[in-house]
Amino acid sequence: MGNMSYCRFENTARDLQDCLEAIENNEMTDMSDYEVHGLGCLLDTCKEIVANRHEIVRAIEKHNEEQEKLEQEYENR
Image (cartoon, rainbow, N blue to C red; front, side, top):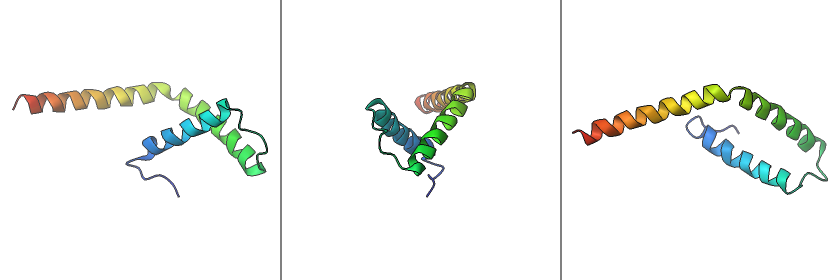
């Protein structure tokens, strides 16, 4: 089942961290064909994410700016 949109990035980041730890610990032996395929897909997807890093940074910055504005409005009440 896919991640719900409201927690997609949070859940996926946690899963990616788990995958990274497995890679760093050299836990890539005795993989099934499905896992090898998944590892290749993971690498391809990570490359695409890096290629879109500027859009990601902009989205984070925009969110942070909006949060700051809301906090300032709340404090000024």
